[in-house]
Image (cartoon, rainbow, N blue to C red; front, side):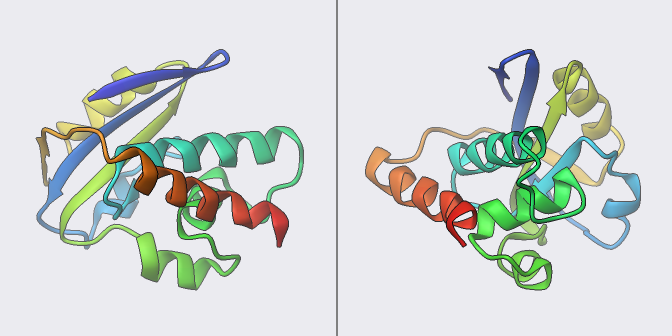
Length: 140
């Protein structure tokens, strides 16, 4: 698990091996999103952009969780975003945000059918392209 600060808000991210997605969304609190992405940096950057869009009232989605999906997918359609980067069986990233992000994520990981797995950094040039894709939502 990695924990970062975005101003006064903490963002915690972990890589998980998700065995079953059927009831996962009923368990997730409002400050947690699961994304099927290759890089933790992409998950965190999409979360920061989503939080910033709500601060500035430039959000496209009704919820921060929905905005994270839009940002991570680079699309404006929530249905397309879920299909592209929504939680799937297998490896995913889980992101929590807020004052108690790390604690919230630890508690949630003990309740869901997932195993935390280690992860490393992605190659910088690849991450840069992902960041550009996430930022495109502001341009559209």
